[in-house]
Length: 154
Image (cartoon, rainbow, N blue to C red; front, side, top):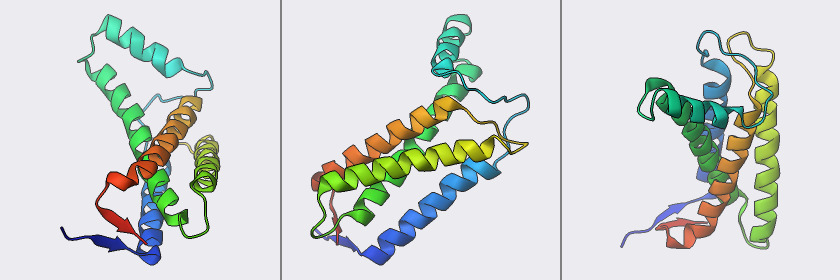
């Protein structure tokens, strides 16, 4: 089986590109009309439940909300995975990578939401921070499962 080696320079480039994509999607893409800032924790789960009861789980509103949550999870899982692999190296403990990536993910997410407060086409949502941090944790766990992946990170 052929192994693919991904050096630190390539890892850094992948991480930078992923970061740029996350920033572009969260700060530059215009939100839908009527979107408002939400500072109520877990309001999105209540909204999902109400949509499922009222319109069903195959309704456009329900599916749109689920895609938004899944998008936050996926973006930050990939970002955290790449960040963890970039930090990993000789003499560095996995635990240290976990803490550094988790803290960076929290700061990155809070920073994005803080900037969105001031953008006319975006709206900050406290729940996005929750989903982003959960995605960061998922990325960290995926990085630990790297022993089962056929990529050789130098």
